[in-house]
Length: 183
Image 1 (cartoon, helix red, strand yellow):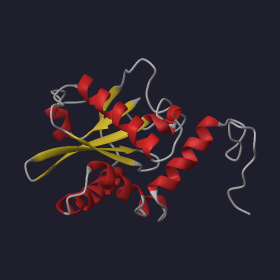
Image 2 (cartoon, one colour):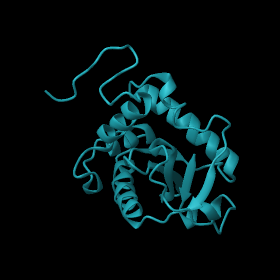
Image 3 (cartoon, one colour):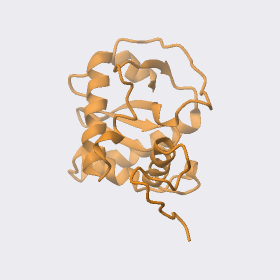
């Protein structure tokens, strides 16, 4: 798993400065994530965003001061959020390295960082309405993004999960039933 951190989050985790790692087009897009730290009146949150789909998860930043708690909080948060959204329990396992190891690097793609800043702006507004991090994450993933040609991150992420789990094609699912995405 590759975790691309902002300088602010890298300082919080005691990892600054981080090396740059270019985006590898041949790599599994489910394993490439960006993370950004933001504050909503006196509370820290971390926005973790999938690079290819902009699928995002907001987790509390309290108590996360090194890389190991960050990886554990991200893994547990992804597992709970995906299961809560109706994905099978093994979906989060495809997103995390089997040994729990991650490569930390700095953000190199400004388009993703700009999209994350937009998501953070929306998240701050939602937190002012007393929403929970799970509700904020769900709402962010339903927001159309220009980076995705105005598709919702949820839809782009589901397409990535279908492609990753089925080497025969995007329409083949594990129960050997062919589903048509478009007619």
